[in-house]
Length: 125
Image (cartoon, rainbow, N blue to C red; front, side, top):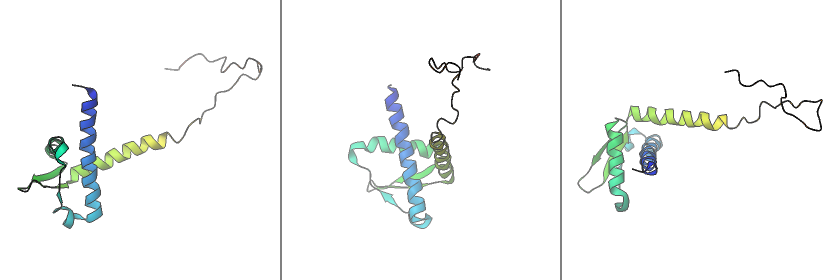
């Protein structure tokens, strides 16, 4: 299979998990435990497969109702997964804020040529 398909499925799973996490903290547990969701017909199979996957990981609970709606809510392990994902991506985003903290020293004797680190002997490792 194509790697793009795997990545699409992974992103769909995380998107569903993030939506349930967001709904949990938006509406509260009392309302969220009774929320029914409709699934669009054009991608119904993919969404249900993703729900089964994250249900199997014990991140959510979901049930398909007789009227083809889905009742779902995030569990504690799912909340932890979302928060860990947010922390890791936040670290990555923040790490990219700090750029060019170390400035290469230009050999001042040769201003015309401007060799950078002429006495550099290579990496330490």
